[in-house]
Length: 110
Length: 121
Picture (cartoon, rainbow over the protein chains, first blue to last red):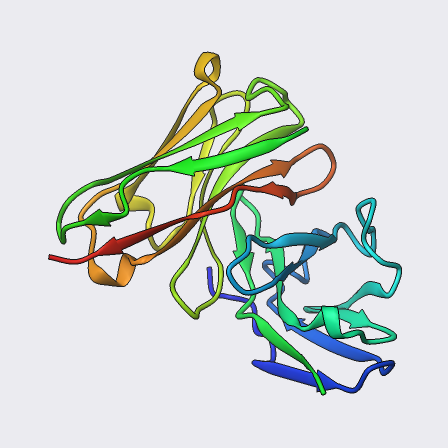
């Protein structure tokens, strides 16, 4: 299984909205509505942001939302804040109990 | 409170076998709605899913690393063990264990802090 493709970096000013894409194939993202998104600050473990469509765990801000179209999933951060500066990863189920992560996107708040 | 904690050697030599242990608390490894995965991250690089073990002891592995990986669990000890054979410097990474919820969905809701493993002679 090949890693899902994400842009290496995305930036935005405070208050703006940004979108991170996650492109897979018809064998993973395109076949299953099982994409999740994770936020990782430097030196920390990843933290679950979004699961199964656009569901957010308790405690995750409603500024984070997600969608999917075909083989591409997207994460949108609205009202960008300084604390959102981190690395973001998508992950998709790929069948046969296998999972694949994205290449990761570094978000910079200008 | 759900917690996972990785433990194992910080340094291994090339060609050696790595053994990592994930000790969990706050949930049972027998719970059919969840399992435990191993995920690694080389310094400055992306996350890579490695292996998973389900409550019924079924296992799954990364296709690229399958020949080198073995995952097992000891439910009574609340531990999941990953072994990786023939270690190479490119395997230097932080290794995480994470709980995977599997009931109608697949996502990693809780992660360990990770343990950095360096492969060097």
